[in-house]
Length: 133
Image 1 (cartoon, rainbow, N blue to C red):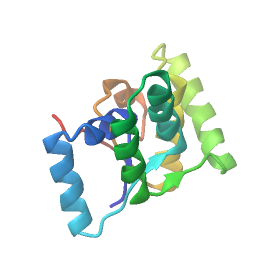
Image 2 (cartoon, helix red, strand yellow):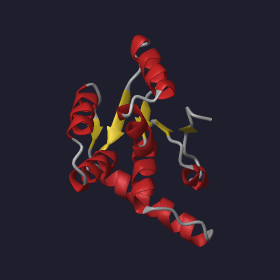
Image 3 (cartoon, rainbow, N blue to C red):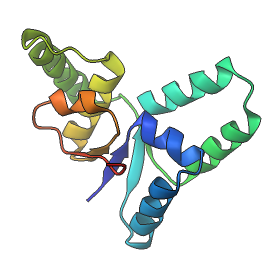
């Protein structure tokens, strides 16, 4: 199984959260792939640019060396994101656009999203794991 790490999980990994670090190490030892979306990359980088956090920036850069960053270069991801957005809106359950794009990326690429964000539970058909709960 391959995993797409949500922004909140990457943030915890950068801050050396023990649960997340152990799970990532287990997956690495099993040769299982973890990756991030370019949306997560953007969210983390914009946060670092808003505050002076050189050590965290360095840890993030190191974190990204081992993981592919999936770009929004596939029209199928954008089509899926539009479907998710419309479905949630019609059900009266909107979520942030960034979360929709991350969910769509995972669904199109056949990945399981790892997140601590309960909003993603609203996305029908999304394979989702919470390593914290």
